[in-house]
Image (cartoon, rainbow, N blue to C red):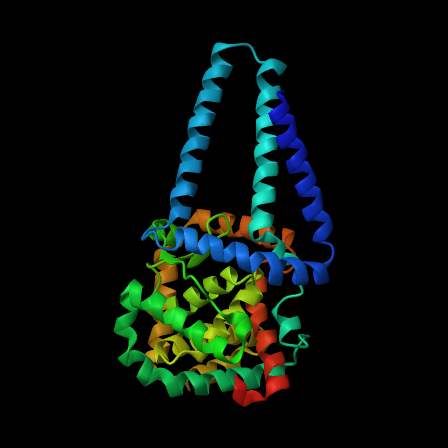
Length: 360
């Protein structure tokens, strides 16, 4: 091992240990990283890659996959041509370990430490706790009223959402509107893009994702059009440092609800209705069925359209991928796994208790 290689190893190990130690102190992460270093790093990323019209992150991921497949083919050829021994596996093991360390440092240094911050509940001084069925019932009723009220206006502007440029511009304006009331949600240097692999993503089951290595928010443009505004605002929430899914969901709600565009407000309330009604259905299915009848016919049709979309792209691999992703969430301070997405319901109730139900 050369001197340069030894120095690289030492630097990575020291950085990895430093990240691990810092992650144990949420207050320090919040003060020095999430509201200190990270906003600068993320803005630099968005400045560097935001102007590119396609997803740099998707290209990088595709190149990595191709490289891994090519490397596996070369390894198999070597195993066939020469005897298996330490001379073959030791250098390979060293390279793999170095790559894991590098990815760990880059992932956490560029974004992942935000999993360990105090977070949006602390910033907004919300007391998030288990809620009662009457509280959940009130939330569902309130969301139904909001949905019905905005339904007609949202449909009148829905056609605009088919333009990705207008969609992403609308999401930026939504955050701008929110930032007028709370500067912590200011979103400079936009970098929101359509995923190059939206069709593949539909089969995997993702509607969007954040790339921590390039700072890009990726949106799946195959999903039903009325869900795209909320998805876009959710991924932008990740860009602002809200790593946990319940936090990104809540940031997405706050921004979309602040939008002057009715289609954005509809998208947020539609998604929140699905979360809240699904939880209430587990507690009292007959109550949800009666509430469903209160929705305007067009909203009920949107629910059916989303169901048809999910059935169209359902496949055996999807459950395995989501099981892996649930493990990833649990490994990153989200012990409920995929259920973390639905925890936004508790946040909404806490927000209503603090600010009044009219604030929802």
